[in-house]
Length: 110
Image (cartoon, rainbow, N blue to C red; front, side, top):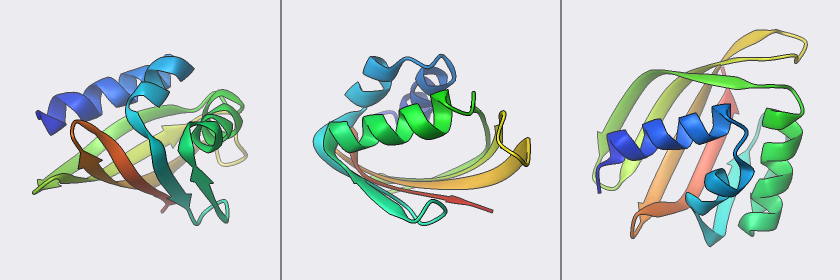
């Protein structure tokens, strides 16, 4: 699996608000934990809610700042811009992969 290409494609799908394409990047039973919103989102239904609320809802655009890959995991530093109160803020994603899709994700703001 080419994690660099996967991450680029995943960010592009998010920036295009391609909900179905974004969800296809995750396993059906994937878990996304985001302490910055105080919730964990489970499965495609939960991740769809997260994406709709925080990405589409705030017209969030994500820019990759730094990508570290180790084994089958990726640590991303990103910059978010959108209609949320701060307008621009740093963020992190820690992604763990299983058979070419995201199995677990942790998102947080800096």
